[in-house]
Image 1 (cartoon, one colour):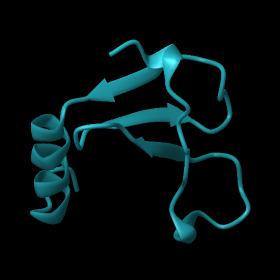
Image 2: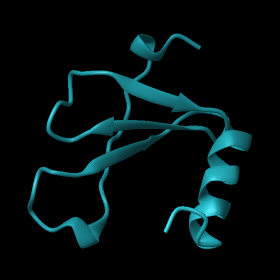
Image 3: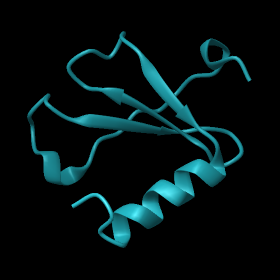
Amino acid sequence: MVASTIELNWRKSARSGNGDNCVEVADLPGGGAAVRDSKNPDGPKLFFTAGEWQAFLGGVKDGEFG
């Protein structure tokens, strides 16, 4: 997949309020995800496969990053 050939629908957590100091996420075809910094939307983006994204979310839910 070439990321520049698909339109991404970016979103941030409702808990982030109206600030622009957030991480934004976009769903990718196949269940993966893309992540970017809301302060720099044209800057670098991270892309994760479905398995990588699910492992990350599981770690968040299990408190591995707290």
